Image (cartoon, rainbow, N blue to C red; front, side, top):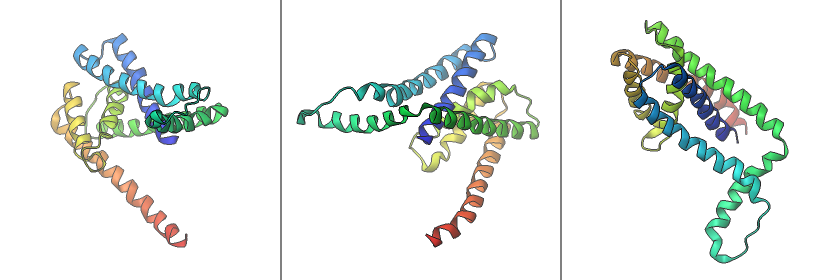
Length: 193
């Protein structure tokens, strides 16, 4: 559940900043249109995984010709179990949004450290899209895809490509260092289990 709520938090942050960018004219209209469509796809995915299963619990299918549908129904029905405790979903969503904003703020602070004075709204809008693009399974852990999307989208927003490369590489190094530190503490716990 936390993974799906994290995905939804990214989409929500991107969508809210997308609306802000449209109203205040921060970006070019072609960039906003493309990225708005991309975010719309993920809003649809959220609808499929969280809203529709709530209504599926009122239906039952027993015909063998619906085997594939039954598997999908069973998977989606598991999500509807969480609707019995909506306060937990909301609390996890709020914590996830806070964590995502902290990550975006970290990348913004990295950009300030390399003397790039871009508006924070660009980061609120572009980083969720970049992180969603990194989920596309064409490389190991999104390596290369994330950096390419970062360079391309921030260059469209007006950032120098060398600065975009350096920010992306610094963020990648920080992400991997967090993984190594966590692994260092987690490894002794795995031996005891």
